[in-house]
Image (cartoon, one colour):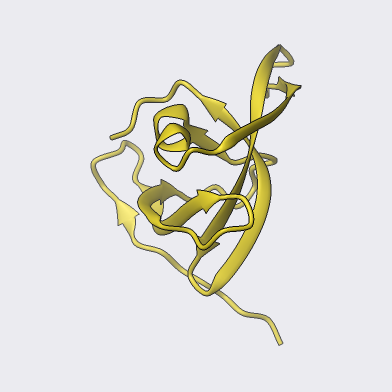
Length: 102
């Protein structure tokens, strides 16, 4: 059985982007910070603004190289977090970025 999940599109972006409510928290804890997130089902990574990582007091776990679609790479910090999307709960190591919160 395949489950299909759809999300509303935010038309303030051009082009419009699918958005979902997610909840994040420190790794291995119950997520507590609700956020609106852009859904990119083809992405290899999840980017979380560092200001949100600081709010949940996420721990930086290590550094890693992230490669962009144009072939360049950048050294990023990875943080361990828990993330809930709909009824799905994940414990992950995620990279931070400098994208400002909307």
